[in-house]
Length: 212
Image 1 (spheres, rainbow, N blue to C red):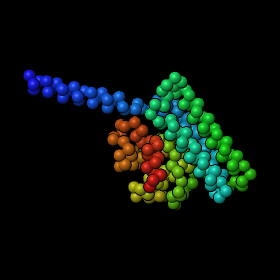
Image 2 (image 1 turned 90 degrees about the horizontal axis):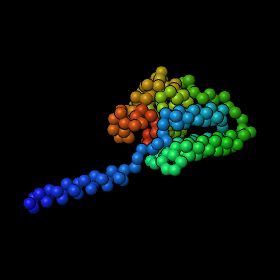
Image 3 (image 1 turned 90 degrees about the vertical axis):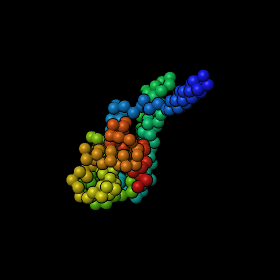
Image 4 (image 1 turned 180 degrees about the vertical axis):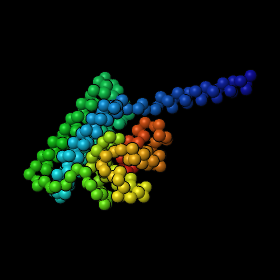
């Protein structure tokens, strides 16, 4: 009888622990969807287009840095647990993201107004070295931008690939996706190729890349 009661007590304790553990787990964000990811990719591409003419202007360095950081912060908010929950759901978060992005772009354009534009193109044709640049979250297969080229250079150096490789084009294709996946697995950001965000640059992957 005592053994049965003891076994029951142990099982009860385990069930209670399991319930508490599950209750404390934050749900995945509702805000990162195919639609919002595509929107962020488009906004990121627009940002790179805005930045490109001033990429070599010393006086624009701070404005470029602020623009990139503001974009990254806006997207990071969409990746937070509980984003999209509550009374107003995802609509409120998407609206907030849009306002943040518009403010960031407006501030950048105001900061570089009057500065001389260079002839730097968005995509470099012959990458030779990696500059110290912030890799934003939100990059994924199908995106073409200067940030993707920076990402490719960092991955090439990290995995000891040649910087003359033909996949370093600024286009996020299958080779880039596979290397991002390899990097995520190496850093234990994901557990398998089936994990959410596998092969995409989310906030944790961005942070890991920028810490290299």
